[in-house]
Image (cartoon, rainbow, N blue to C red):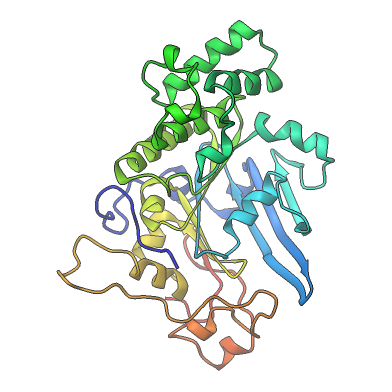
Length: 353
């Protein structure tokens, strides 16, 4: 289980980051009304020989233009599969078995393959953990950028190349006009990730799905990528779904947070509230597992005992109950649903806080 934060510098004191518009008291109904991405009761299933594995179950959230939603949880929580479902890249036999995904008010989860391909890249960009997996080693960075631009935008070769150079400059590639003709292996890991971000922005998408975009980078490069993502949101009103296991990255980047466990959202709140007053025992456990600057020398991190449940054979009641220090008889019999527990804060727990 990988939970230790690897953000640049110590985690900020809970609640110290300036709130965004979405943190300043806007209700869930108002946010959904102006949402760019609106995910409603999403369910993703994988048929197996032992039965149907429900990897994502009844997941709902909305992201507004210019907002970063951080989706956090342990490996296997369903974070990446939720992102893959949104961009139509679920690996068979995985499929969307229920719910709706709306982009700017129109459903995209039921589109034909070709129609979804036109949306992917043009209106939705993607940034993945391993930049080498997103870049073709046989083609120059410039060719990959210009082909992406011309696929989605009506531009000449010259205009697309000029746009590609501008993108490389915008994401912080030095000497972009010269380096545009270099190949992926000629860039460092951090620079390759910047190129991937440039590719994601090539067609000026409304939404970016960023799946662990800083995990493979050292802390100084992480800080630069985090700053870059925040600036892109501010300058282009791009909505970002940031998928990560790293609470430090969440603290530095996200406006709101959705905490996932066993395929479900167990808590959602503005980032300030998550760090200042986490409601769900699982959120509390995640935060307790993060090293803090004020910890005494030699102090041990609080590990989360036990293991995540088998998604093919989930326990009755709350999936977190076998690992929860607050669990009572009701928790082992009934499944808690998301309920309001504070201003703009919801938790799926019978005994929050």
